[in-house]
Image (cartoon, rainbow, N blue to C red):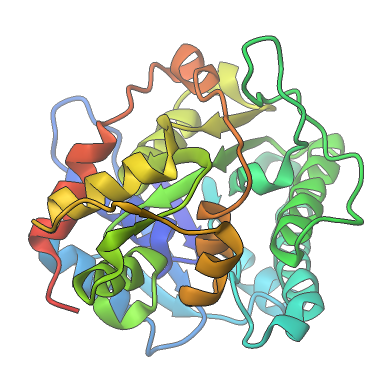
Length: 336
């Protein structure tokens, strides 16, 4: 049985990753995992329990730990106690209050990743875990390849105009590559905009979008497009990477579909049994009309297309249909 530690266990990716691992338990030929879930507060466990209840998964992780990963001593103690075979590093903040607190977001996210990889590197060489790190397409450069899509070779060359969220992801990912240069086994995933089920009280952007469209925002759409991926696909990709040594040492974009915003909003409206959007709004006005969060800001960013085929070749991942994912989430979501 492999020992797994999941940081950020009550966030979008962390909760779906735990659900994925628990769902595999007992399946023929499936790897067995002992899961240690790490969260930043006792209160946040409600988000994990909500998803496990929705999925009909009894029990939960083998151990739940509340730790301040921004403190290096907490990371070191946790690593020594658990001695994990695999660390799935999903811990990151996506917002810290007001927009002017952006630099705090950058500092906090880089500190967390720095401490996790440092604690892993300080373990005896034969006990160092594999680190599977969740980054973002926001950490990549904006230059498209021959296919017309941004791929894993894209490099962020200028941070001057990047958002705090993008800078935090880029600099955090650099901490992972620093650790790799010092001998830590790593793999990195760069998800596009993630679509998944989250507890109503979480403030997740898709929940807020559902709420806004039920109140009449279904009438509006904006120009542009970006890439989307299901949270369940992100979780499956991370587990497949952990189980495929030949795929380590690289980054992988996770992008199921590049969709115009109007088409995505059409899918949401259909899932909620609402009329489709018909009125075009300027993008700047939509920014004022939606609750601000980095993930929502990604949805209304300028035109960007991403190539998510690399992970398919590396580990055989097959993406789920995005429209079906949205419909499933809407069908099981409470009226929020």
